[in-house]
Image (cartoon, rainbow, N blue to C red):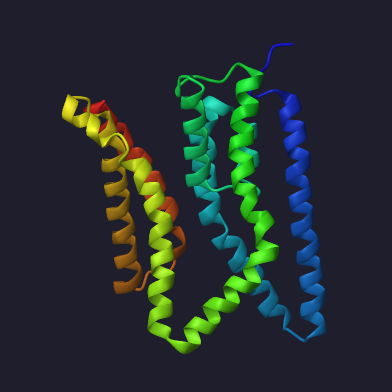
Length: 244
C-alpha cells in the first residue's frame, strides 16, 4: 500500500489521541462546575466565566489553524493537527519541520511521499518539545519559588530578569529569521523575505497594542497574535513575488 500523509489510518489514530485530550477537558470542566457549586459561586458568574473563556479561546485557535494550513502542504493535515492541538507550538513546529525537511534533502513545497521521511519529521517535531512536559513536574516548583523570592527581595531586578529570559527565547528564533540574509550580498534576495515578514508583523502587533491601550480596545490583546500572524502570511505573498 502506498504511503499518504492524509491516510485515513493517520486520522483515526490522531483522532483517538485528540479525543482523549478533549475527554480530559470535559472531565475537569465537570469537576470545576461541581466544585464551584459547593463553594457557593453564583450560577450567573459560572455561566459568564464559561462564555468569556470560550470566546477568548477563538484567538489562539485561529493561530493554530494558520499553522495547520501552513504545514499541511508538506505534511498533510493529520500530523500538524495533532502537533498543534496538544502541546504544540506554532513557531517551534514550523522551524522543526522545515529544518528536518531540509536536512532530508526534500523540497519544502512538495508533499512527503516516503513513510521513513514522514516518521523522521514526526520524531523531530515530537521529542524535543516533549522534554518540557517531562521536566515541568520536577523543576517548575523550584523555578517559581526562586522567582518569587527574587521578586520579594528586589521587584525591579525580578522584572528585568523575566524580560531578559523572554528576550533570550525570542533571540533563538531571530537567528532563524536572519540566517540567510547574507545571500543578499550575492544577488539572491530570498533570504530577506523572513525579515520583511517579521518587520511587518511587528508593526501590526505594535498597532494592535496602541489601539488596545490608547483607544481602550482591550479585546485586541487576545486577538493581536492571530491578526499579526495572518497579516504576516498575507504580506509574505507580495514580498515573495517581489524578492523571490
